[in-house]
Image (cartoon, rainbow, N blue to C red; front, side, top):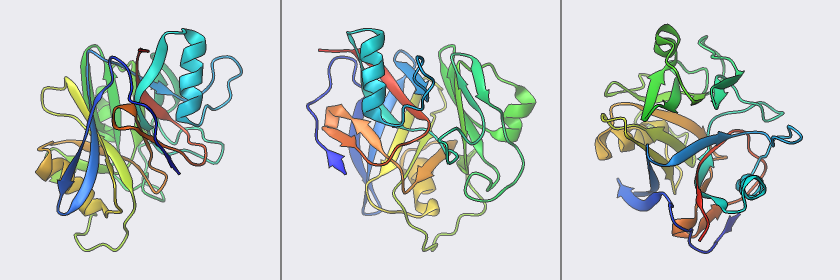
Length: 240
């Protein structure tokens, strides 16, 4: 379900549509000067928020002048919508790092962590993250990695028939921006990874999810609805 909303207010992240190999992708860029957060639970009752609208309502209750200016699902989750792998908000760890190989896309090593704080964004392979123990104000783990130091994930096949709407994040070398992307048509892993590396020129990028992938981009009049989600990331800005 796709609902069109009025354009967002001041502080909205920069979003646009670009085409790569006849496939449209929607991108949203966030800078370190913006207030990017991870969301999972209502601070009052601990219930999983599960939707962009619920996050927006929580922000309005927190401070009447606040709203989401961009948001996206931010990683895989269990049946109870708790995170699969590392999840850190405001420096507090709710779920631990997972480095073992396992089933599904998350366990298709190497997987990785999107981490931010202290004026920088990073996408880090999970075992390197474990070894380096970086300090993150926010962090979410997902998998597989799409691009690792300029190389595509070794398990991706150019002619794979497994095509879904997919979303993920990449970080440029300066680490002062994060570029979030969602395919607007089904794509396989190989094409999605090449979009980050070959079209955007990014050396490290991480997959968030497929099939359930959704975007909230009021600057484009876009609000993807559907069944409840787990982790959500988004920028917070003033209304108006």
